[in-house]
Length: 241
Image (cartoon, rainbow, N blue to C red; front, top):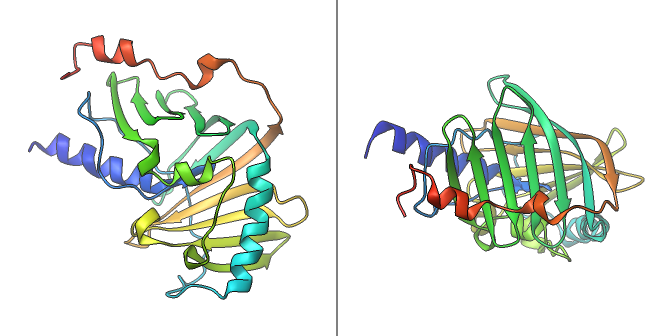
C-alpha cells in the first residue's frame, strides 16, 4: 500500500473519530470507507478541556443529567451557524455548518480550504475540492448516527462525567463500541442547554476543538444542502467504480 493511501486511511480514522459528537456532531469511526476516490485531507473537529480522562463510567445520576441535556439538544430539529476549529498543533480553520434531523449534516470550510463534509441520512461523505476526491462512510457506522437521531439515547455506560463549569454543563463521553479510543467532551449552555463547543481527545492525548457561534434554529433548508453528488463522483476520472 502506498504512503498516500496509508495517510488517507489514517486521516479517515481521525476525522470520523472526531465528528459525531456534535452535531455534531462528530466522534470515533473505524476505517470503513467505501472504494471511491481517496486521499481527502480531512481536519478533525475538537479539543481537550484540560481535565483528566475518567477511566470508569460516572454514576447513574450523571447519566440522567446528561440525558436531560441530550433530550433538549435532540428537540432542536434544525440549526445553522458558524464554526471555528482548533487542531492539536495549533492549526485553525472555520466555516459554516447546517444540521437537520434525522441524519443530515453539512460542514463547509472557508477558503482557501476546499473541504466539505455532508451527511445525507445514509452516508457521510468527505470531499476535497483540491484533490477532487471523496471518502464515504455509512452513517449507521458512525457516532453521527447517535447525535443526529430524532431522539438521542445516552446510555449510562458511555457517560464518563457531568459537571458545571463557568456557566457551561460539561458532558464527557467515552465508549469504545461507539467512539473508539477517543473521549468526547461536549459543552452546553447551562441555562439554555444549547451546544456551544466540543472537544475530541484521541488515544495519544491530542485534542481538536470546535466552537459554534451565530447559531440559528428552526431553519428550513433546501434539499440540495444535504445532497451528496453521487453521479458526479462516480463519473469522475479518479473513481475506481
